[in-house]
Amino acid sequence: MTKRHVRPYGDTTGDGMIQTSFTLPVPHGPRADGAALQLANKMGMDPAMVVHSKPIGPDFTFFVVYGSVKHIVDLDEVRVVEREYPLLSPSEVNSVVKKTLRRKLVVVGGCIGTDAHTVGIDAILNIKGFAGEKGLEYYRELKVINLGAQVTVPDLVKRARTEKADAVLVSQVVTQRDAHIHNTQEMSAAFREAMGDRRPLLVAGGPRFDPLMSAELGVDRVFGRGTTPGEVASFLVHALSTARAG
View (cartoon, rainbow, N blue to C red):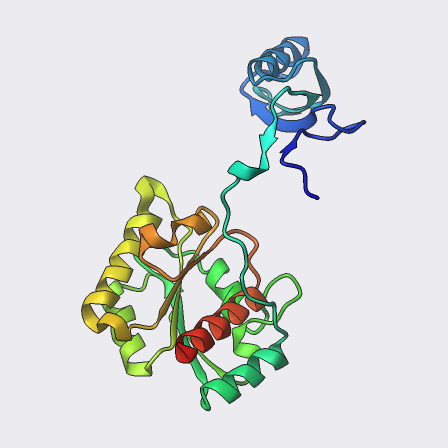
C-alpha cells in the first residue's frame, strides 16, 4: 500500500535530506559560503552544508547545498495529469490508424505568434525525433505538415482546414508576459469560431506549460518538458479512437 505522507530520503528513510543548487552574485570565498548557508536556512534547510562551491567569473558563485528539511509531502494533495492511455510502438500506432480511420491521420504543427523556437515542435514532428524515438514523420499512416516558426493563427486555421487536419500541434517556448498562454488561447478560440465541434484535436506543448492547464487554454491536451513523439502519437490515436467510438 502506498504511503500518504512522505519525507525526502537521503542517508536513511525519512531523514528529510535534500540537495539543491543555486548561484549568488557574490565573489567566491568564505563570505559567499556563509551567504549560501544563510539562504539555505531561510529556505528551511537546517542543518545545511555547502558541499560544493565554484566561482563563475569574478563576481558570482555557484553552490550545491545539502541539508535537512522538516516538510512533509501529502500525496493525496498532489494534482497531476495521469496518462490514461497505453504507450504504443510506431507499428501499433500505424495499425490503429489504419483500422480506425482507414486513411492517414493528418497532423498540422508549428510555433504560433512570434515564437521562433522550433526545437520542440521539430523534436515531435521531424523524423529524427527525440530521446531515441523517431518523430511523427516516421509513422507511415500519419501525414505530417510542419509549418515551422512564427505561424499566425489565421494561417494555422486555414491550413488545418485545407489539409482536413485530424490534429493540430502547437509549440510555445517564449513565455514573456504569458505570451504562450495568450497565443494558445487565441488559437483555440479561433478554431472554435471557425469550425465549432468539427475542429481538430488541439494539442499544446512547451517547457513552461502545466499539463493541468488544458481547460484554461481551451485545448484537448497539454504536454510539458521531456515529452516524446511516442507519447504524442499514442495520445492522438487514443483520442481519435475514443471520439469515433463515442
